[in-house]
Structure formats: C-alpha cells, structure tokens
Length: 202
Image 1 (tube, rainbow, N blue to C red):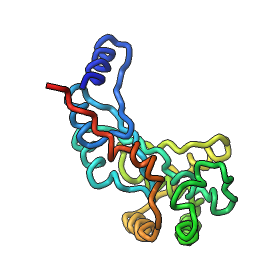
Image 2 (image 1 turned 180 degrees about the horizontal axis):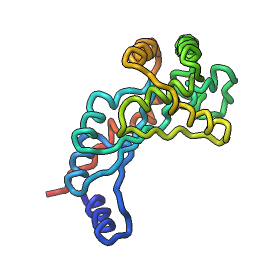
Image 3 (image 1 turned 120 degrees about the horizontal axis):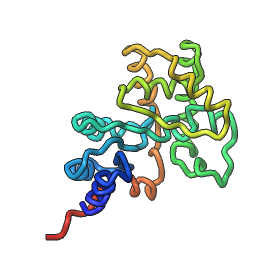
Image 4 (image 1 turned 45 degrees about the horizontal axis):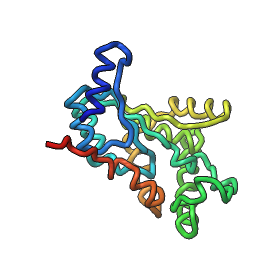
C-alpha cells in the first residue's frame, strides 16, 4: 500500500505521530496495519448502526486499534432531532431512509421507548445512547457533533450514566425494532463495505 508507506515515512521523520483510518474495510485494515500500526479507526457506530460489530470491532481489538464512532447519536435521532422538531426539507437528515414515511413512524415508537428507559436512568435519551456506546469498551471514543455548548454539556453528562449488562441487553432488544436502511445507497457505497484498496500491481 503506497499511501501507508508514505505515511510511515512521515512517522519516521517525526512529522506525524500516529496513523488513523476512516471507513476502511477489514482487508484494508489488515494490509495497512502490516505496513505500520494503525492507532485508530473511525466508522459509524451507534445504537441503530451496528454492522461493524461482526467483523470490524473484533479485528480492531485483535490488532489493538482504537475505535472512534461518528454519528453515535444516530445522526441526531437519539437526541430527539426530527422526532420532536420538524426536519427541514433541504437537510441531510431528510433523505435518510429511517427518517422517512412508515420507517419514521415506526422508529418514533422506538425513540419513545428509549426516552422512557432514559427517564428511568435519570438521564436524557441522547445520554443513554452515548452511555451505551461508551460501555462498549475502553478502546471506544465516540465523537458526537454539536454546535451548542448546552448540548456539549449534555453529551459530557453521558459519562456519568452507568449501565449494567442487563441494561445493555434491554437497549439492544429495543433497537432491534428499528426499520429502514441506515443511509441512502449512494452513501453506503462510500462506506467501509466497499472500501477495499486495490492490491499493488505485480
């Protein structure tokens, strides 16, 4: 992998300290890590986007790679965005399959159950969703995005939410009721599932 070789040189020259990847397939991760240790991998992971748990998460743990989940609030869904407020027609959220038509109606019911469970834990739905991802392991560091200090403070509060194994299982059962694909086909085709880098020509 030519790119990894160049990044390795930058590490050796002291110009960068670590190397991370985003949206990489299992094959790409293994090949890149063989050239130089990968420190962190960024992928989408949240209560309702869990495809990486089957192959990618175990591989990262085998190789000692940290996991940086983006969109840990399900693109804002578990913060109540779109459920409580209306979604602008020109918003990126408006084209998400889980936030359209019958899928959205069914997923609102899932949100309501998550919100009720959060109340039992004395926290907000967003804090419960972040607490769930925080409980997936010490090697997991989610990166929820926000433009408001109030929401940043709320997100930080998720670190105080303690969940038992039974709590985690209960949350998982509720999320199994989610309907619709996580994003549009065009964006899926830009994801790790289709991100195998080509082998070096012989």
